[in-house]
Image 1 (tube, rainbow, N blue to C red):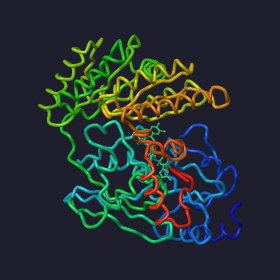
Image 2 (image 1 turned 180 degrees about the vertical axis):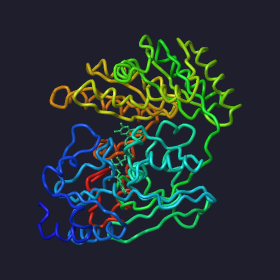
Image 3 (image 1 turned 90 degrees about the vertical axis):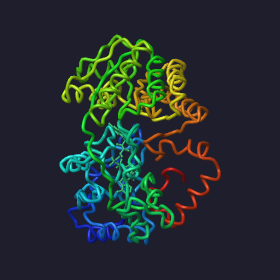
Length: 460
Ligand SMILES: Cc1cc2nc3c(=O)[nH]c(=O)nc-3n(C[C@H](O)[C@H](O)[C@H](O)COP(=O)(O)OP(=O)(O)OC[C@H]3O[C@@H](n4cnc5c(N)ncnc54)[C@H](O)[C@@H]3O)c2cc1C
């Protein structure tokens, strides 16, 4: 049912008239997120500026059993911030303040709507380091990162967003404010509720403050690119690097199609006559960086790489790294619809998974560019398709299903970082099993008895 005028007026009273959008043309930009082929109009979009306003909105919504979909920047790739029909979209981007930088405890307290880059830059200004760096970091919000437990290019060495969340302020669907976590490095008092909210995809509460852990900035970094004539050789090089107990901060790969698209788009000077490219970065103490870079180069040569290019300075390093950072945008130029997946397998199974993706593309006559966080076993097979072509979309769906089944079979997961949302909801029960599904449903019901927060996401 559409939101009534009276209800919208009550929302306007809570957040201010200028912070509520209701005109169709204003709602359209909020009717989709970064996920392809999904769109749904909300009833209204509102921008909160304080925790108290979030409390007011959720109380009104809970009393009237109105659906609320929390939204950061809408870059999500699993349909997490896609509106439910006639829902309230609660957008946090105006809650973007850095509230405190505590140098004594190496923490930063932030509001949820600031971008990841804003957080990373504020840490850098203080001579500190916030490592999680999703490819979307210039745009994605820190609240969205926490809600999705986002990863990034440095995940192999530094972990994902969860590893940097020390505390959260969350407004529960009933309007109650909950604080979980603190600045203590050790704290085992009660259940770790903050870990429940990290990765909860907007289904359990609205995150209104995040206490982040910062670490010292690495003194040195080296960036290099190795090219391979065969994808298998690149996968073997990754396994050999890890087996040699080197943990580079970045170990990313691009396949042939992605390399060509990136080169057409960004003209970085990547060689086109190769089947795979590895982007490798090592950081830390200068002596260790020099040694690790030399070892990685040696391993790549042993595994038959075509060439290794070592960046001579930071400028060239950033340029080479941009090959990976622009991969998604470069692929997205090629076809009307880009569907990016994130099947993830144990690293030992990477070569098998890559071969399977290639075979699946052939089997269904589909164009798939694959890139990803090779050191994490996290692949991004990216379907270049056209959602208007129903017959092709049917083949895409069948290919997806087979890729997820294979990831499961190899001991992997249906999503390494993009979340379940709507896009992978149908695959979750098979992956998670009955007991996990029951516990997740019961947790959801106990925190959100009226089912108002992001209904229909993750599971029904
Ligand atoms: C080009 C591109 C590159 C990307 N690269 C990566 C990558 O390297 N790694 C990676 O992990 N992801 C990546 N992503 C996916 C996406 O950017 C991340 O999932 C990101 O964390 C989403 O942030 P957002 O602010 O856009 O959140 P949104 O898309 O607005 O929301 C995502 C989910 O979080 C919930 N949410 C948002 N804010 C809050 C809040 N304050 N409280 C509670 N719930 C909330 C929403 O309800 C939704 O379920 C990429 C996306 C794009 C388009």
